[in-house]
Image (cartoon, rainbow, N blue to C red; front, top):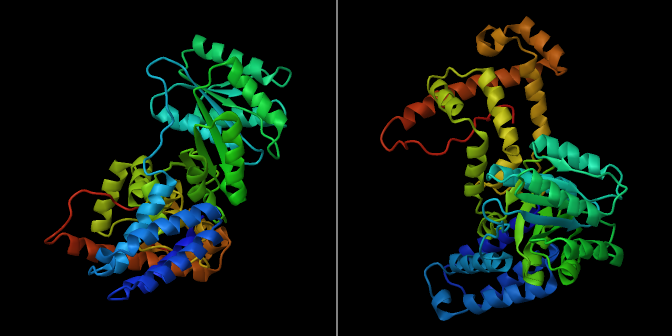
Length: 450
């Protein structure tokens, strides 16, 4: 995640605070100096950092804090509150018209920010909420932009309106709106053209669309990997077009994440969503409080639960729980759980949302490494997957050849699998006693081969 390095640095600062029985004003100043440096290195806007540290210091150096029983934790509380305030305090939603009234959303941004993909992602989100979106291809300049929108629209099962590249974006937008009225669509999303940099021609084209049809929401797509420049881009667009909200893309990549912390404070524009991957499902609602928790290494269990509820089949989960209790689950069940974990963003994504599981910035979990485990299981016959006990040395050699791995990898997986079955049986026995939780969230099984 974008904030891994920042999280690690902040956690190191706070460890020092929590280890002290009492704090002095100089302790707080020294800690906040470290916080300031960590934020600047994460590419947070300098003015925002200055306001942030000043606000925390004013709260954290009061007598009631310095003399409290847990002064270090109190300072962390103020840092968390200030992070939330800086990113917007409340969750911002795209404002939509009620009933069959059509809401027109204009997407804008620079080339390479992921605007066309994000347009389709948002259409999918709105469809899940019961809306009837129509995508309109207004980018007549970039090669394959229309085709890309149509492919993504098909994947989301959302219709796409296109007139090719011979008409002006304004005419296409007008015709798209008329098409929506005739076909009972109540959300029209315009995918407009971007440029490599902010220029007058692009702004004039976008302004012309807004002059000719009523646009209810102007959403800016910003590449968070551009760091401080992302804030400058947002400021330019907001000044010329009045942006209603922002979507930050590539927040899962090797980026310092300063844009997420700066954009709201500098422009006043709320962040609607954050893109956490290339798949059309990799778009998360932006919750300032949850993001602050993730930055401070406190996890984001609520988002993890929402992902699980969206992706995990309850009946299959209940069936697997019974099998695990009796140590009867097999490699087919394991394969199913690996698929569920992939849908939730992979192991690294899951761990980043769990409290206390913040990973050091130099430690990377390669989700692709699980492909070797998948290859081994796919090389087994259905009988072998169902009854691993029959896998003898000759079968292991055949499986290894089929998967393209050394036989030691097959031995290791089978050994870990058997150990996990025994462990799960022991755990189910312990959980059946006093204090057992009923119901609740079940994490997908995925302990082997990692």
